[in-house]
Structure formats: C-alpha cells, structure tokens
Image (cartoon, rainbow, N blue to C red; front, top):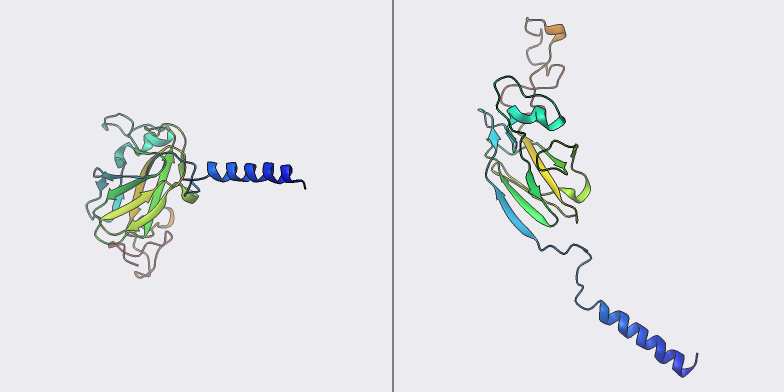
Length: 184
C-alpha cells in the first residue's frame, strides 16, 4: 500500500470516528426518557383486581357492544410513546400475581388490541400500590393494564351449571380457583 493510499484510508477512518462522537447509546430513538403518573383506574370492591380502562366499557375494546344502560364512549387507553415510563397507581390489597399490559395503535382501543411482547412493556417495578412500565422501543402505542392478586381471579366452574356444592370443599374446582381471598 502506498503512502497516499494509507493517508486516504486514515482520513476515512478519522472521518468515520468523528461521525460517531457523542453516540453513547445504541438506541435510535430521539425522544428523551419521560415518566408519567397514571392516577385513574378501577379497582373491584375487594381490591384484588385493577384495570386502567373502565371494566364496564371493555366489550368495546374488541368491537363488541356495551351492556344496556352503560354510557359510551369507547374507553381511552394511556399514551405510551417511545422511551416513556408509566407509573400506574393501582391500590391493591396485596402484591399482584398477574400483570397484563395490552397495546393498541389507537388511543381508543377500537383497533386491534394485543398483549405486550419483548421490550414493548418492561415491568420495572410492581408493588401492591404501584406498577411501573417502560416502553423500551422506538414505537408509539396506547396501553391498557390489568392486574390481579390471584393467578386465577375467576370463580370455580361447576358441572353444567349444577347448583349443589362440590363434594370436596377443598377442591380447587375446574378453573383452579382457591377461595374468595385469592390467596394461593
């Protein structure tokens, strides 16, 4: 390699290094990290289940109809752009065992709704009073969050709607529920 070729190669390398000065992150997002508190939400009477969207209006999320007597409009999801941290104040009676964030590309959830995956909704913290989510992508979403203190928040299922109690009172039932308190 001649001296002029080495000089040209050196200049190319210096120019490439100069263009990467100041790039200390691998993220290509231009938005700075931001934290937002979400104070609105619905908790059931036992304080064992939480939803950031009014539970009575959830049928609209998948294009369904509201029950009779429930006023509209479609529930609004929480804005979740790139690099945003959301602090959901949930107020449950104990640590949630089930946390389910759902995403939409629409603020009203009237489009496709899907569970979070990968780094779309990183759960940074969970307590009985607070769940912290971070959007660690460069995409803009709207989010709806549910949380439950029971891994099976539903009532036990009986055979064909029979009214009598199960023979074994300690049985977990077909749905795996284990009592009214939701404790395992």
